[in-house]
Image 1 (cartoon, one colour):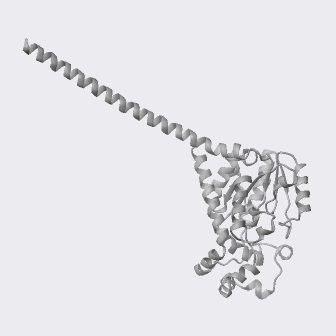
Image 2 (cartoon, helix red, strand yellow):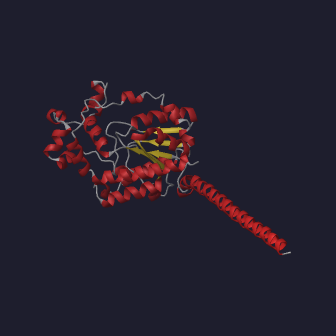
Image 3 (cartoon, one colour):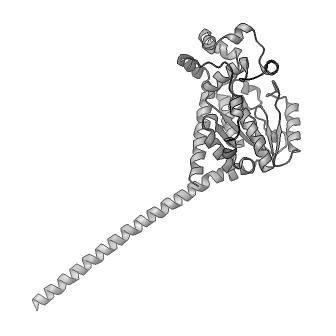
Amino acid sequence: MRGVLRKCLSIICVALLMYVFIQISGLKKMRRKLSVNEKVADTARKKVRFSQLANEAFSNLAGSVVYNRVPKCASTTIRKLIVKLSIQSRFKVHIESKPFIKQCLTETEQTNLAHSWSTLGNTTMFVRHLYYVDFTRFGFQQPTYLNVIRDPVERYVSAYYFNRFGFKGWTAEKAKKWLVKMSDDKRSMSLDDCVSRNVTQCLYDNPSRYLNYFCGQDNQCSRSNEWSLNKAKENVMNSYLVVGLTEDMENTLKILEHTLPRYFDRAREMFASVNAIRHTKTANKRQPSEETKRKLRTALFYEDQFYKFVKARFYKQLKSIDLT
């Protein structure tokens, strides 16, 4: 009898151990499943994050688009791409491009611009070298802004020589219309020589900053300081759906295709066929020394801080798109 009891107890113990083992295994599987589900849910949340940025944070903006293009940031190439896209996708594009076009406007000029823009329709892209304008100050809905920038030092180098020599292949007549007037001695001075003499004076004599394009029309925006930097950041967050990077044009166009398909559908495909880039190489451009670049980066401190801010935002947007 005792032997039978021991055998029964042994069977019961084994059964209990198996039950406990099965329960523990089931809990582990459930935890793994919950973990996977949580990851899926987290991925889904990330997928909509960029759409929320585009559709909620910018829901107050009009369907019309302003590309207040920054010079020497592939803006001529992008302008030509937009013209091609407008033919393909049948949207209106209004381009203002002429030598030394005004970028800083009076109050009256801003009012007139906002009024004129309001009559162009809701599927129009306006393209011009222009400092940011707050249309709401004049009683109009704010358009959706976009822009493209590049490393401020590289841009300054390009602008310095462009203002002296223009693009390769320009005729003498075109150069006469577009080039900044200066003495022959000043025109022939290399950027290395200009900076080595006095970097502050060089920047003053050869102004070419892009913070104004985002800070706006306020007089304080003409100064590169903490105030203008913060104002530029604020305007980017409130009005610019996309600020791309010249150095990463492939992903700039990818983001534009995703956020503004009405205007940029198949932009990457079409960009490959745009040959404008071969006609927009700055003539007589000389690469400066590393010492010159170091001095320029120090002098362009606020532009450099703004560029880093835009770059971080850009890759955050790209990451959100890649998750979809």
